[in-house]
Length: 129
Image (cartoon, rainbow, N blue to C red):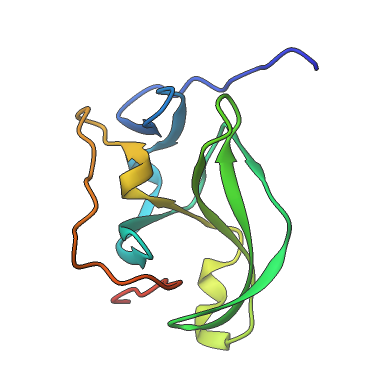
C-alpha cells in the first residue's frame, strides 16, 4: 500500500464523521435541497479525499443516472455518490458533481446531522431546482 496524501482545505468545510478528513468546502455547495435514503444530502461542485466505487445506472426520483458511490480515502466510509451521466436533458447540470449525505459528514461548525426516524428507504436525489 502506498503513502496516503490528503488534500487539506482552508476555510469552512465538511469532513468525514468517522475520521474528520476534509471532503468539501462550504463555498462549493451547489444545492442543499437533495435527499438521500437516509435524509438530507448536499450537492457539491467539488469534493476531495474520496475514491469512487463501480459505475452503475441508478433510477432516482429525477430519472435515470449513471453514478458511482464515493468513499472517504482515509477510512473507507461511504459518504455519498457522484453523478457521471444524466439521461434526462434537464438533469445534465449534475454531471461531474458529487452528493454528500449529511448523516455521514460533520458540518463546518462541527455539528453532525442525525437521521430522522421517519425517513423512507430508497434512492433519491430530489432537488427543488
